[in-house]
Image (cartoon, rainbow, N blue to C red):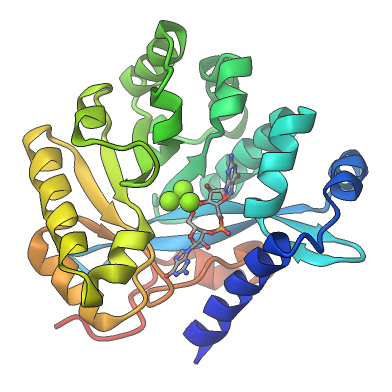
Length: 282
Ligand code: C2E
Ligand code: MG
Ligand code: MG
Ligand code: MG
């Protein structure tokens, strides 16, 4: 039931955006104030190993807890922040907060942080990441950075070099939303990613669409041969979980296993012990 509610909630945010009820200019103008007043908050969604059923980490997902408008989805405000330039301070906040929170967990779970291609074209990410790790004391091996394919369409050597530098320091680089947009399997050879995240559109079409399974199998094959881990995102039902497990996907993420939540607002206990999936793994 919780799953259903969560799903509807996510849908509603996007529908609001689609119907243009959200005032782009208002949000753009109001963003600086929100940043000063601490309205941006991080939610964390758990990720699990298919092999062990144990939690491996959390993905940090930003929300705007607006004083009048309630919780606003990143799908709405990140594109605005990319245009008005506030993506830079918002990204700095997200990275710092994610590392701070993770450094306090008792179990050394990984934390994954999303990077914006716009942000990465504007400033060197390696300096920011290195400083933040020093400041928070988080082991670089526990940080994962998620980048999207759009970055690699016109990737320049500077960005590549920056990511490689971070990778040599132990940070892992994941390719997010794989399969959307311009993707082709050839992108997987454009950078030595540690991980590929299969987009949830394929995961959600698994049951009624043979071509989704064909794409997933191809990604798994290619990824394995390139020594990359595979995560499936957007797993909402047991059947998809089972199919993906049998297909050889390494990590699972989705509402079935856990929704993004404000773990800071929860009692300490829950964030300090690895969580198990909410159902029995066969
Ligand atoms: P993403 O990185 O692909 O994150 C996964 C999104 O899928 C999240 O949406 C998550 O809540 C949602 N999700 C997870 N499991 C399920 C499921 O089982 N079913 C369904 N229907 N959805 C699921 P969210 O949190 O709304 O974030 C949307 C996107 O906004 C993210 O997609 C990411 O691209 C971007 N984003 C979020 N936080 C940040 C951030 O701190 N920085 C940047 N640059 N982008 C961010
Ligand atoms: Mg992501
Ligand atoms: Mg994704
Ligand atoms: Mg996405």
